[in-house]
Length: 80
Image 1 (tube, one colour):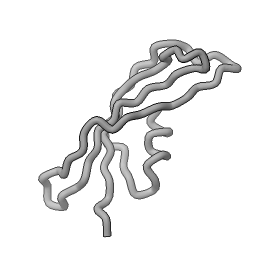
Image 2 (tube, rainbow, N blue to C red; image 1 turned 90 degrees about the vertical axis):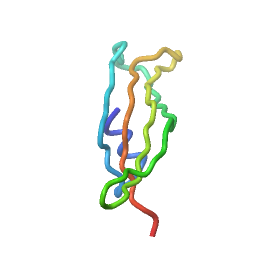
Image 3 (cartoon, rainbow, N blue to C red; image 1 turned 30 degrees about the vertical axis):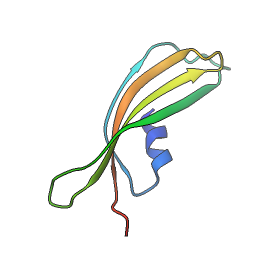
Image 4 (cartoon, rainbow, N blue to C red; image 1 turned 120 degrees about the vertical axis):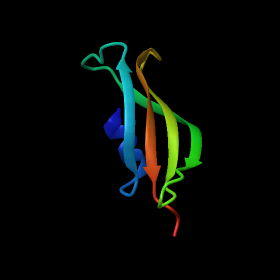
């Protein structure tokens, strides 16, 4: 889940915190779909005013069964 979360956001984003729980095995031959939803956006009140987002993330198999779930906090660069 961490690898997929970082890949979706590009090279300039940083995965800061990841908390995930595996709920079921991903069986050989199954298709796993990674899903996510942004739940919070804010600007961190530190020296560089870093932008942050928090996401709910989860994985489902082809039967729609939840196989993993978690949250991720991601640091984003400021727009130029």
